[in-house]
Length: 455
Image (cartoon, rainbow, N blue to C red):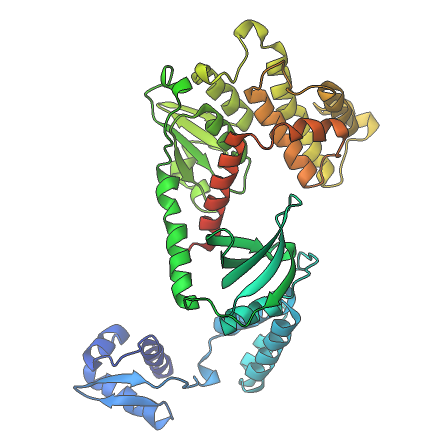
């Protein structure tokens, strides 16, 4: 390591300490002799670094010392430039101006070579996902900075509007949404509010009874406690399932942002205990351990004893058979419509919606090559089947309703399925089933835990 690099390393080590650190410890971490460390400390002090201390006592770097720009590496400059560009495009006007101003100040004092690197446009931030927001992010940031309460009018996405007084804790900038974490006085608990659903916000003079750092610690603890439920989620078994519950352990592999919600709902309808294993996209979902479960590297999947089942429709059919007393499958002699529409949703509805959502439908002369024919044919068939029906396969709720209903609810919510009266009536009779609401609540908590988990 060059001497300049070594001096920089010592500064970084000191920056990470709030209290004096012994010279011997610094020397060990820097990989130099104690004698060399003393010389380097003296050199840094001569260069203007405000390092207090002496041999045998310890050293501490005074707060506020500015690292010389020449100490930035090329990758550090790229990271700064990329981060500033992201802030400039993905936050509010105030932070955007601040990011551009900060980068201009950094560039102005950089050596020529690094200045060119800071202005290089090889790394580009894509266009933001724009959502109309009534409440300005600047106001939310101000409430965080000044540690003041907010009065908000909130729309929960289902049309229910409530007036809340909240204690702001954090503001999360995700790819498609901005989320305010706050303690909600109405609910008496921490809540996550999407900024695009905050219809009005007023900064109050009153301050929360606890400081924001303390609230943040409480909030993070509340998220981490969800890990216990995620790794071993076992509700009490209802009387209707005790008689036929298999002794084999049931493990559910999922990700909160996936089709796993379909299986999650069905598991709640069954009422049997199960464990949840969260698989992260790009990491554990492609690990050898999970690929042994599903070589496709996708969720959902289940392991029931020594049996592994993948694909949401197949899991629904399997679980309905494995736990017959849950009453989620018709008698074997009456399963024609049940199988027909369960697999029609998997084989026709889902691919038709997926292709249609990206603006592609088979041309008339190509429709015979696709199992579903055309999007219009699928939608018309499904609507005609559901007209006047409460359930898809007879007079009783079944696993087929979980799968078909999930496809329809998802499709209408995200605009990839027409909101026909038949679909709205059918989904309206399913979406508030207690088992589904339990699954939604648990899924939201798992999603929050995953999103806000420390890096």
